[in-house]
Amino acid sequence: MNQSQTVATEPLKAVVFDMDGLMFNTELLYPKVATILLERRNRRLSQDLTDNMMGKTHRDAFEVMIQFHGLTDSVDQLADESDVIFEDILDAELAPMPGLMELLDSLEQANLPKAVATSARRVMAEDLLSRYGLNSRFASILCGDEVTSGKPAPEIYLTTAEKLGLHPSQIMILEDSQTGCKAAVASGAFVVAVPGDHSRNHDFQGAAIVADTLADARIYQALCLQES
Image (cartoon, rainbow, N blue to C red; front, top):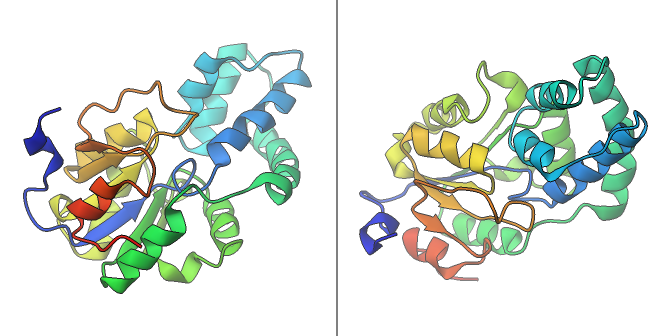
């Protein structure tokens, strides 16, 4: 990647966060849920299936699981069962990703608006954000069950840009997955990939920066922020 790709073409005026795997460690927790679901059906969770489900809306992800393993369950059946399993795991293991809280603080000090655009359902997004008192800190929260076409389609990011009253080129989007990165790049935004242990093998083609964590100095530099 050459240096020119890491510089925004115009000042960045807002930051949009993906949620799962970017703000919280949920992409490391979802495979635990999927493992339990599949073990109950004498099936096994593979890395290929995990990668194919990642970043998609819950309905699309369960459709992938059903087709991959030839399951007879409906999407709603799998979703209801997974919610029960996930609640116990969340209570014990949910955590913010490194650098999240410090970045939110720095954005607020600079008066830069923030939004969330997540493939998660509204009920799940509200639950996760509320556990850390984050709901009110975002100008907009748009969820996977509120758009027609989920990631990798850019709809969720284009709609979020409209809600912020900005052109996508004025927005930094933070994403952790290949699917999400494709959606962000297609929107025309300045895209920063922040892979975690769950997505280091993903293709982040088109991202301006592939950051180490949300604390990466290049994120702060692109936004002209003071590091916390």
